Amino acid sequence: VSVLNHPPYSPDLAPCDFSLFPKLKLKLKGRFFDIPTIQSVSTQALEAIPQTELEHAFESLLNRCNKCIEARGEYFE
Image (cartoon, rainbow, N blue to C red):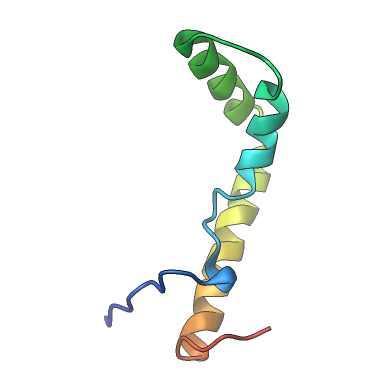
């Protein structure tokens, strides 16, 4: 198995958890919490995300990685 270095900046390979940040932001935005409350609210928000949505995020990342490998690291649309 060949190991490919991950490019330092590649819009084609956004992290698979990138889609999770807006969901957390909606729950936390404009509120002031202490650390335990932030942890609790964040955990609840993440647990509320359907498994199918998480699976889709990982499948999407895998597809983008495969396209990047096929393009030999070059940018593509």
